Length: 78
Image (cartoon, rainbow, N blue to C red; front, side, top):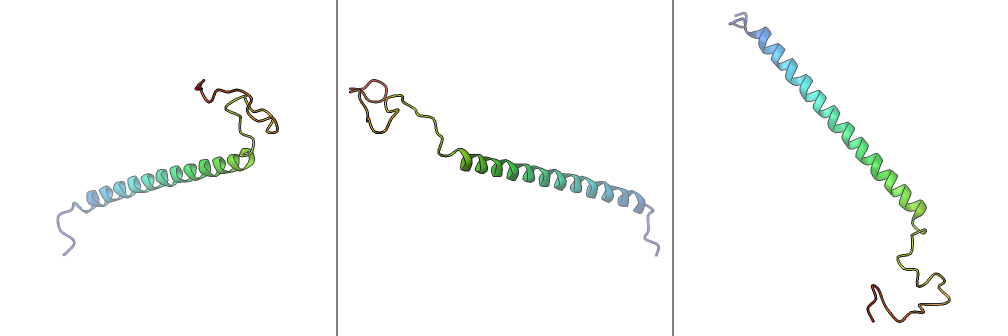
């Protein structure tokens, strides 16, 4: 009634190995999630700080008061 076989030590060692692998996998997943959230937070902060300072796509209208002076639109369409 002692558990029979004698393979208990090998089975216990295998179970410990599997638990360690699972723990390492979960730790890596948690680290990846942490990095992803930090990157998203940094992107949101950057957008919030520089959102109003966007570069103009066209030099046609540098001053809003003057409006668009040329007769072509976009890539030279008339």
